[in-house]
Length: 286
Image (cartoon, rainbow, N blue to C red):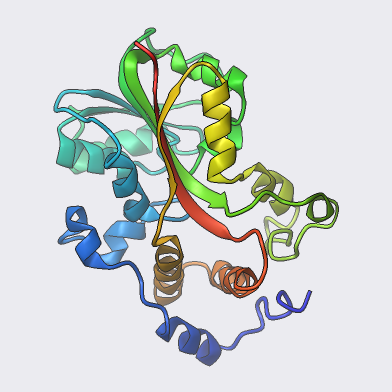
């Protein structure tokens, strides 16, 4: 409990002193984001990583102009726009929580309404796409909530072309929770959200569904449905998390999230598991 006692108790001065020591990812490692501000990289994203994670995912893909890409769990559509803008692909943006009307208007305003279509629906239900339709399924920071089973892979992959790629990138854990931690979760991962979301069970609804990159690789490999081509933790995951927390504080976006993320970072220096980011890309046998 000693690492959790500071949650929501740090002063602004203490927070800013800590954030001043954060470095952030090296821009030289991300030429794809030249000209992008921190706001461009993190605004309209759910979960960690922002466009830094998206770029790491895209680097593993064999994208060609005109490819059909399903942006599964697209959130507010930032990844859909990035894909269409820089890679000339046609994107189907699908999300459970963001309305199709919102996404269509956003894509229209930014000039991509002819290359991005929008759907609001539950990805675990039958999908309205032909079989063997997409060249790539791109899924950032949502697959862990619904995709951790062979049954779901079977459900999804019927819409991926033979030889097509499924790429997931998200927050992950550096180690699976131990039996003791499952029985008594670390407080930095099992906490109450501020009102009006105080009834949310953060551990069961979020962290219990996160796994290590090795866990996800094993699921994909043993499914018999995919050949894993790439599975790695981001080397600069900690720097990206630091950069995001600093951005949230500067923008006064979510004071609670800033505080709890600082607690998680402090706890993770001497405890396991800690949060990280990873990318896994696999192909459907032809």
